[in-house]
Structures are given as structure tokens and as C-alpha cells.
Image: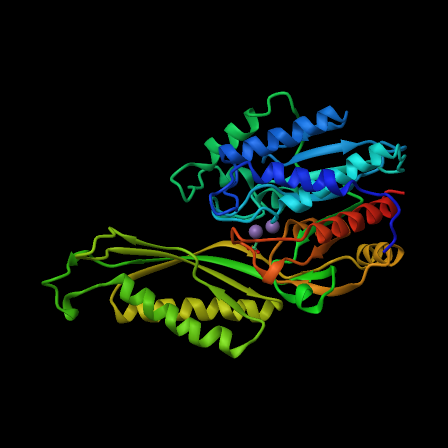
Length: 413
Ligand code: GLV
Ligand code: MN
Ligand code: MN
């Protein structure tokens, strides 16, 4: 590997450790859910670091945070790099934070080197990528590209009973000194560094994945409503049990969707049973379906099948069913020129790569609707992510950040 000084690996590792302490969980992970107190603390810390380096900091109405280092031609659109700082409730320390802090490291390294780029370089920290606390995911990047309606999200209930409007307002006012910017601006290119979150790179023993496409995701929220009844006295014919319907629907989908297609993914990640008493036949079950596939038409067929199975099970148990779509990210391809710029950077650094399709969704896919975009993946141990045990080796962190730096140098001129 080329050893020209580029980024400061020690500084980056120390930053990742520092941010992992914000919302740290006893099991070594992070709980820094979108727009929470912990998310606000992380944003504040990043803004402070930026100001200390003399960079300009901005936020917009959905609390996307931007850190700008000017170029020789400030009127040119910036090269944008970054990721997110929010996490899953039991998330790892790298999902999002790696890309955000590596992007900031690139900015600092350019500053350390006294580099003069043609274009401005901006770090973006997108709001609510995870979507676990507030549906949908990728709120910040969706709004940025005009694919999401901020006013329509205000009444969204959080998984913890909060309202988005309150938490968003509190997040914005937590950085009163940061200048507001309109939502969305022109971007020369967007690059997101991220952990792979799957086993492919580690298995292949390749340190860098160049992401050429992202599979599609649909989130459905299914509500099944029957009638509460006494567990001891109510015979089957008298029951309208939504949990019995839910179990049947899920079992049929588990048997039908993934076994039939190795590329298909179906996950029930949340189920709320009400009133939730051991000796009451439930009145209502609310469950989530996370559906994924690289092909739009197949994903649409899986969505249709989910509807069919839920409605059939509801009929059998004489319960009401309603299905709401809460997130719809079509599969998409990244820009060939940015993919090539990343490949060229890896070539110059003599780093082995492989091209791959992302199974996880990312803000970069929304950005790709308004600007040339692509992603850089680094391996994670045992492919584990959305888990407190998530781990990326220091060596791979450094390699990822070097590739990002080298790519930015090319794209920012
Ligand atoms: C992102 O967090 C995803 O679920 O793919
Ligand atoms: Mn992520
Ligand atoms: Mn994630």
C-alpha cells in the first residue's frame, strides 16, 4: 500500500471512540437514536470540532448538518461527503459514525496539508437515516433531494411515544449558533464511506468494496384489530384474535418469500400486542415488515404477496386489517464516473477492491437522484451490524478513510 501521508489514522480512531461514548450501551454498542438527546450531543460535538478548525457549519429545517471547507472557487458546487450519526436502539459504533467522522477527518487532513481544492468540500451528517425511532429512514437525505415532505412528517409518532415535531425542534434549537440553510443545494458529487454490514468483503478478504448499486426497500406497517376476550372462557369460534392472524401471515410469508429467491429479504422487526396481558385474547397487533430486493418489479411482487397473506389471515380470523406503506426506496444504481474515481483512488493507493451491491439502504441512494454519487464499503467482523457487537478493524478504518481522501482530492480538483 502507498504510504504517503493522507489522513491521520490515530486521530480518526480516537474520534470514533469519543463519539461511541455518546449514547454508549453497557454491551459496547450505541443507542443514539435520531433526534434524541444523545444525537443532539453528538451533533454538538461535531459542530464544536468544526468551528475549532475554522470551518463553517450550517443546518437545515430537517436538521441535516453541514460542515464546509471552501475551495479556490467558492461559487462552484461542493463535493459532499458524509453519512449519519443516529443509530439503532442497540446499534454499533460504526454504522453511520464511521462515514461521518471519516469525512470530517478528510476535511481536517486537507486543512492540515494546507491543500487548496478547486471546489468546496462539505461534510454532510444526514438526519434520521435509521428510521427506527421515527419512520421513514433517510429523512434528511430524502428531504434534501425533494423526495420527502418535512411538514408531512411533523405529526409522526416516535417508537417511544414522542412526536417528531417536538424532537426536531429541540434538535435544531440545541445548536442555536449554527446558521440555517435552505433544504437542498447543488452538489458536484456525493461519496459515502460505510461499513458493509454483511459478510462479503471479509469472506473475500478484500478491504474495500466499491458500491455500484443499492437494493430496494419497502417498509409496511400492518395493523390487525379483533376483539379483546377472556383467555380462559372464550372458545375458538368466539375469538377474533389478531395475533393468531399475524402468526399465520408471517409464517406463510417466511415460507414463501426468502426460500423462493436467494436475493429476497423479509423481516418482522417489531410487533406490538395490545393490551398485552397474559390472560386477554389481544385486541390489536401492529407489526412491521421490512422487504428488500434488488429488482423493483420483484420487490413490488413481494409487497403484493405480503398484502395478500395478511388479508387472507385476517379473513380467517375475522379481524380487520390495514396496511400502511411507511418507506419506499426504489433500487438504484450509482454513477459510473464516481465509481471509477473511487476505483482510481484505490489503484493509486494499491488497495484491492471488489464491486458490490448494497443490501442495506443508504442516504447516498437518495443523493444519487440529484448528483453523481457512489459509496465505499469496508468489511465488518463476521458481517455483523445493527448489533452492539459491530466491529471494524483499525486497519480497515484507516484504509477506508484514505480511499475517501484520495477520491475527494480527485473530485474536488
Ligand atoms: C439501514 O439502516 C438499513 O436498514 O438498511
Ligand atoms: Mn448506516
Ligand atoms: Mn443502520
